[in-house]
Image 1 (cartoon, rainbow, N blue to C red):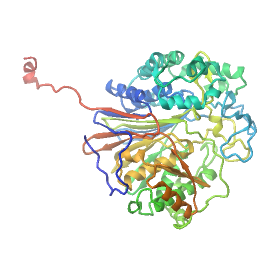
Image 2: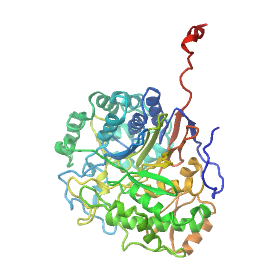
Image 3: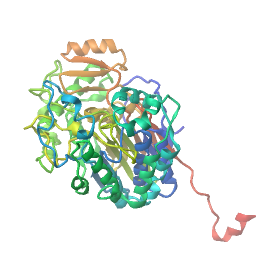
Image 4: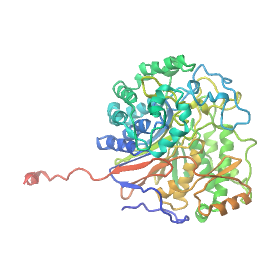
Length: 567
């Protein structure tokens, strides 16, 4: 099996990973479901590029990972073309025009944007104007090679023929069963016979297959200004929702430059606001660059302490400065400046945990998100994270369409007068962090993960795992993670010698909370420019699967020898 050499001395014990990487030279797709990765490969084999593959993968994920994304959701796409051009597409959700800052009653003392009667998380009031379909179609139109009809075809097939219920999907349906049962069109599919489908049984989404087929034929106008959008509006009007025809027809995606930085000689290319993720990945790496992490054992108290302190600094700045860039002047250049990082780094006490903010900010971002990466043999790279926010979003399925709706209103601060309080038309802030790492100007890594507000800290750790600790890509995405925005330090129990580590961190002043996992199923691709080998990986925290292909076309004879071919 081919391997991709690490650049640093390994400072973590060698342990078996739960999953294995895939290696290929013809193309690679990674996602959180094998059928979705297969859909992306189908595009590459049929002459599509990485953009086509990534969007086909996402359409498929909206079928087979229904709790994580939908065509009326939100997300970001980071693209690096073979000629070196980098760009991003912002298809994040927006607040309906009829929304008001005081439309929900906050629960006093709650730190996760929860409100009375859960109106911003379940039901029609929880739905924001979704941009997913327009973002995906825009990426294909501007940078793809195939038609939208070709790209949705695998997803249509999976919806009509059905897909197998994994233990992961089964458990999430069980967790959300009572809310799913409130909406008949949702319960009909995901609670057949009134109960969660058993592991190994099949879910068929025929209505959704018909919807996707119509989208392939008609384009995004089928939703934005068309009959699918009208179906949403009619369902909203019947159940007290806010979204109108004008909200949907007026939705726009934005193509923006990425946020960029450097770390120990590598270039970081990530999502700029309205995602906070890329900015804070670069900010944290800038802070950590002043410490020689390669000399610290992975998972040692000294290592975790530095990660935690840099993360708390980033969260202090996120609460103060991050918002919709069309309504707020977000100081990205200052936040990603190495001089500013040096000032913040000087505040870190190596012997004692500190607080870097006066109060813990509210944050309602859910971990129910999905991610995929795609790379083709020409060198085009895509990394994209998409969501409907909470598991199964608002739990609402628009009758007759099979389409689930997001609950992105839960991301807005329900208390008026704050940076991210509800305002009509505001683009909702996210932590999603699809990221590309370059080495000597060439693609080196593409990665991302679901996980809500824990995303950018998790992506930062994976990057550091490879660059600082010499991990393989598979080890980097599977390695134990931590997360700290204050006051608690979440530590995955998978760290070596966890009990001793917990004790040591508490001695440094950290309030440790043991958790099974931080964030979700990370996946990514690493590229060896010398061999052309792509290493695709996906971690144990979701149903992820890397999938690629090698080989190629037959070798044909020269013209003079053409006759010999048929002898």
